[in-house]
Length: 142
Image 1 (cartoon, rainbow, N blue to C red):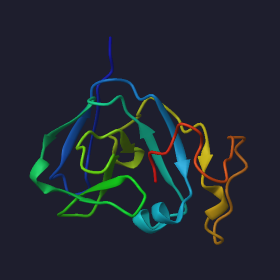
Image 2: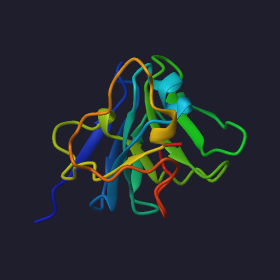
Image 3: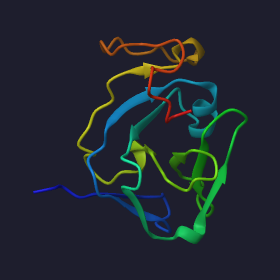
């Protein structure tokens, strides 16, 4: 039996479902993620293209595309960071783990962009592989 993954924004205006298991997950320590989240890193999962379905509040979604980066999708009402995608595609392949209801069924397995880690918070000694830049084949946080 396939477990349903659901999530949403902080104010409840946006709700979504992920209909396939996540492919991978990791932490991103880049400056963009720090500024976007207000934390030292962002926990993100990679979704199968087409498996993230917005079931409520699609009209509340807004995007911001930093130069050279993936489009960041957030709720216009509360500002909650929800997804990332290739600019203009609307196919969400990056999902912020903090937006998931309950257990996402996956755990972060690496730490990327540690060369940019916040100086005010040490990276935990958790045994996860660390990459100064993007992990090869994994760049959904940025």
